[in-house]
Image (cartoon, rainbow, N blue to C red; front, side):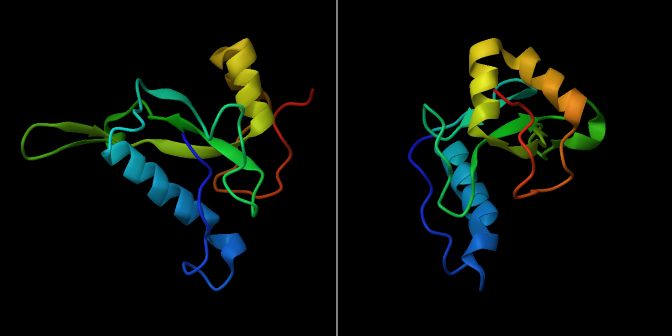
Length: 130
């Protein structure tokens, strides 16, 4: 995704809690500026290569994105353009490395085996162990 994200200060009284907002804003900015493109219905976006944590407040280093396969997650604008609504799940570096080295199917196998939290769960166990 590019360089590590900047400070989360100013968005929350506790900067540790604000990093997801900073990351989402940065991701949205990069998508709008065509610096990142979400191709297809799913994939992984890494913060740098090798993956580097977004900021010092978290170990997360990238995103798993997925577009659910139903019409509720698509929006047709008045000009006829269809917009996909993606879900984002934060990933640790080791999860991104698994996807890079062994393929997307290997990561999804771990997701199916262990599941993903419904939200950002800081400190969750990685889906993989090496």
